[in-house]
Length: 74
Image (cartoon, rainbow, N blue to C red; front, side, top):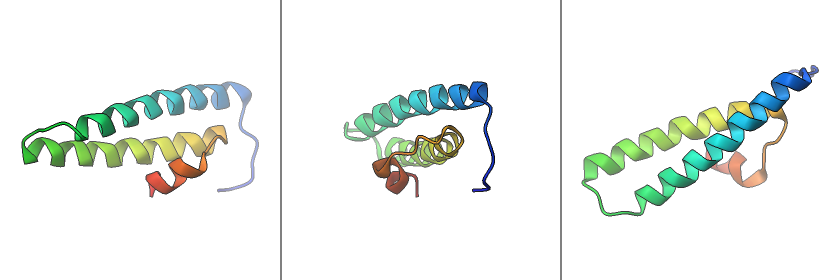
């Protein structure tokens, strides 16, 4: 990522977005552990990939990437 300064307001917004995405990721992972039709599981796995990609982006902006989320986001 390029070396530049991120405005404090943007960093704060990115932090909030990342925190909310963390909740959605946790909820989605919990839902995946429930018995559902295979189509639902496939849909949830795809949704989880989207959430993790977004989380990685917001984490980079907010400079709050955590090691376990870096691995999950890949």
